[in-house]
Length: 249
Image 1 (cartoon, rainbow, N blue to C red):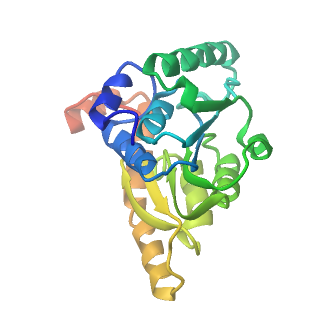
Image 2 (cartoon, one colour):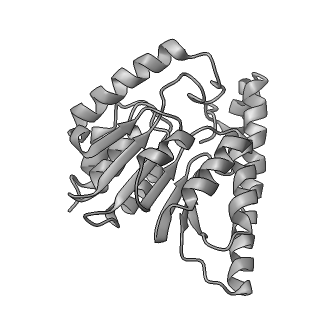
């Protein structure tokens, strides 16, 4: 049984910093609901604990939740690739405080290491994998490939900033679009959901590739938004969309 309802979970993370919308939280929560005692949830990239709390709240008693985040000041957020060591120390303190305030601290094992190092500290297969780590192509591809191999058959993999970040999207194209194992289920904004249950037939693989390729139009739109924000053309965007521009997530 889940620790709390989804509505209670949203209330618990209302004031926790992070790039996660309510519909994305719902996908994480629902994935955690599918786990059973003895299963394992692994999260790569926790920041201040918003997604960690959602996953831990949806998981039943006896499910291990492992949060992997070095809090090293790199890949911290949009356009924050390096040089945020002081902020990272604060992130680490706030992360622990947020988990304690939400009542899930004892359910979460935090590994303050990079995801490639964490393999040796996590044993067994993974029922639910959530990837929101480094968004550059190389690290993103490594996370999808190497941690994806550890997802159990019929398990779930969720990836944030899909079809939004260039690096993550290229990694998805390389590892998943024409892959043989993960079936594309859908997305909530930039959070994609995959299941390790793709049928072996050529038709299933072709359909799976087509459904992912169809998201590239949305990806192109997001790139345009990012270019305009980076070029400080917010006034133009407000005139077009009638709302304040925000970094796509």
